[in-house]
Image 1 (cartoon, one colour):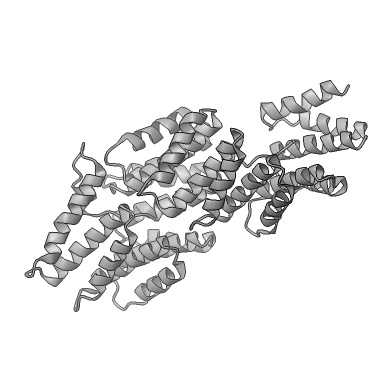
Image 2 (cartoon, helix red, strand yellow):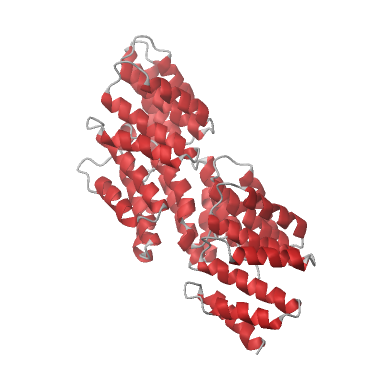
Length: 459
């Protein structure tokens, strides 16, 4: 019995959400287009019009240096939402070439540049830029809070989550910080608590944003997205889906929040069996010109799970191969991709390739516990098909006994080991494993029924 990748399992969503969450709350922090959004008008049109307006200001020969800097910063932010990162980078650099700018205005350009560098998978350069900002004499407290927040975002992208959290907490503690910076800090910390399944703490941070009298037009929909994820994680699926649908339909939802909401909805639709619509959502994210590369990579990993469920292993291999070459996959999503590919390779008879992918997961220091347990089970499956029953038995047993493995994975491994025991002529041991699996309460119904079926077939 194969333990398929668990990307689509809602109960296992926090590891993906961590990536989505940290990338989401590290997004754009407000700009003119958000303040003057034309409701009912397509957001892409508004962003493009914003770029045209600021371009006219930049090109005017009588534009004052400070005004030119503000126009460049606002145009850069519009470019960022449209995923035109090189154009945004050029505008931030152009600001830094303007002489005699106020210290904080120059620092804002550096912070924006750091955000773009991080999106371009140059996190070390981003950290270097932010360190220079934080070392700037006479830096305003609000700007310092902004830089501290972004330092947390960049460190989180390097999976240094505890260190990242400390920086964001420092930003939140600065009383003079702008409301929008505090709201993004609340979102960031909510994501941290969501990952740890500390839902009450996450909710408190999100409510601080959702109830703010001066809610930022970027932070507010980001908090709505995170609250939808929280509702899904805590079993309030209808409310979570309602909020995701609302974000996806609204014209004024920031483009990258919309793509992340669509990705979350795809995962929920996968879990609830609405496979056709889930496939549409995954594909829409993958084909979106505005989705950051790491979001598209996550969508390919999610779609690979769904394609595996639909019995399309060759397409699984294609999605995983592409995703693994893209930027931004967290250790959890990279491990999930290897697990999903191991399943496809087992189904295609490529057993050695499956073993190699499982080995990759087991060698990853940051792979989640449940995925290591799944990798052991799948490697056992591959060895079983290769006729290496001794090694298969070791792997199944290791999966059963893996510290911290969820019950449903233990139950799957027990069924797999029971099947192997039967092949080896050890029926009493097989029945013992199936019985254990059939009596594990925190296990999906289909897994329980499979164990019971084994017992009925082998009285």
